[in-house]
Length: 140
Image (cartoon, rainbow, N blue to C red; front, side, top):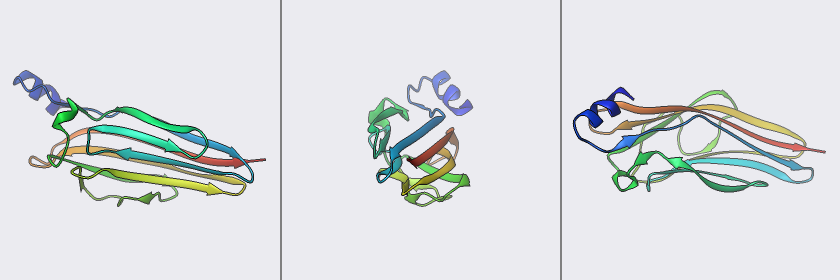
């Protein structure tokens, strides 16, 4: 965040930012529930769910034309179930889109709490951080 302010003061117009998210998906038995959170190489953050649809949450970089291999993302699990998909607790180049998914089949729920960070790949300075809560629940 401070680095973004420094860039703005130096006349750089690229801003990296993330916001905290709560992403639930609910379905009725015998259905499935699932949530995917993705940080994409095109500069967007998206979500998809089994029962509730999908969409764009935000742009992690503005302008999005600045997205790509100059940035890396790391997702760390704080609590709950390990999501499937991209690696956890490892810096991954945003030259490719990265996603993390939880799911629930049958009655019950699966959840996780994640910290998502984006950093400059050259300077290794973390530019943005957010908490993401994901919940997949199947009820009667």
